[in-house]
Length: 109
Image 1 (tube, rainbow, N blue to C red):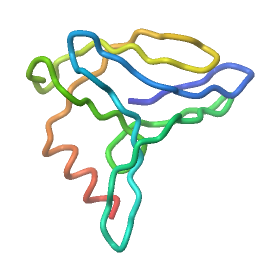
Image 2: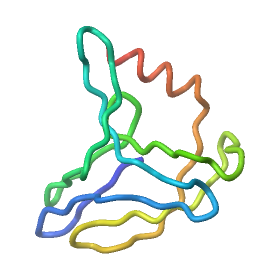
Image 3: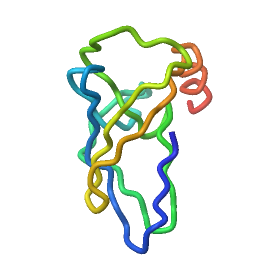
Image 4: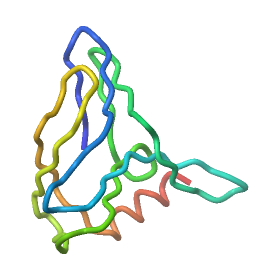
């Protein structure tokens, strides 16, 4: 997912929610420690003015905890993204297969 900030001011993604989808959604960033990649929660993802940030495996991404229903590849699921300046924005994201995400992760090592 690519987040585009077309505004004059920087903004930041502060969180996400998916009522009926997951108990908790966390913003995360991978970090290498002793040669092993670990996922770490982050409090925000900065989005500079007139720029964009891609949420993807191997970079900033969203992790869903406590799924309330199975996710189906290519299904569109609703999320609410919470931004510092822009407030809450409703989006739909496409579910990717786990093997696709693993391949993307491996290409970043």
